[in-house]
Image 1 (spheres, rainbow, N blue to C red):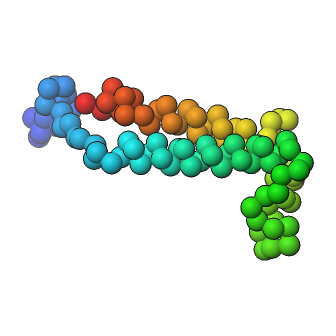
Image 2 (image 1 turned 30 degrees about the horizontal axis):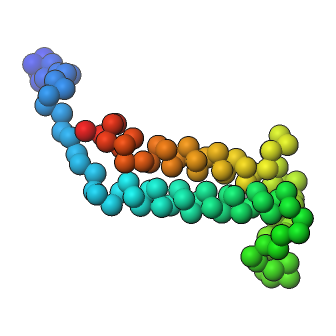
Image 3 (image 1 turned 180 degrees about the vertical axis):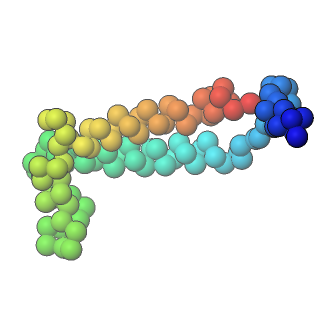
Length: 106
């Protein structure tokens, strides 16, 4: 019984670890999704700071974009949430680039 417990706690050498390959579509898909998020974040930031910009959804619809983008919840510590979205999606685009994926996954 002591031998069975000892074998379960064995350390596996790094050369015996399983390496998995990413599908070829993963990195470009992630970058495209980040581009979409970045585009929406930029659009909402411009709409937040520019009063003459009409949002895509009407004020009279079920979803009122104007009410959402001008509510007190749309700003955190004086920074619009849309600006935080630009920072997030910009960073994620860099992290999801093909070069970054090749560096961390071998």
